[in-house]
Length: 130
Image 1 (cartoon, rainbow, N blue to C red):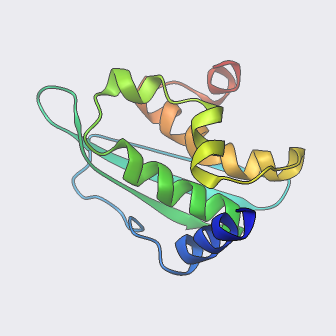
Image 2 (image 1 turned 90 degrees about the vertical axis):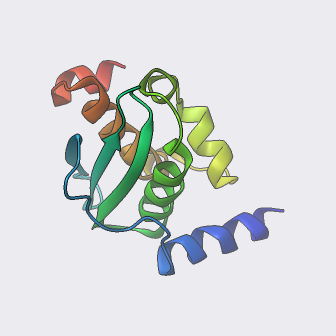
């Protein structure tokens, strides 16, 4: 089963579905993982009901960080901002489908950290506490 998920990660890295930038966007946020050099930016567009109508990511980094960002930005389309706020670390790990060590875990969770910072409109220190 792990091989299936590893193939998905490589596919998402090589053929991302939601890579790009949204212009216009309702909010954007960008951050990096200084341990390995991953950098992710996420742009989100919402409608009048605070439902995500489009999400895209850009940046560079390892396959796990890029696949996680691609899966997450696809996952949030159609969700309300309140639903997006409820997305957890476990949701990201379930999407990826493989066990990760502490260093790779930071890679996988960078996109969630970036997304939540944008949704909450808060600074880096506060995001670490969510």
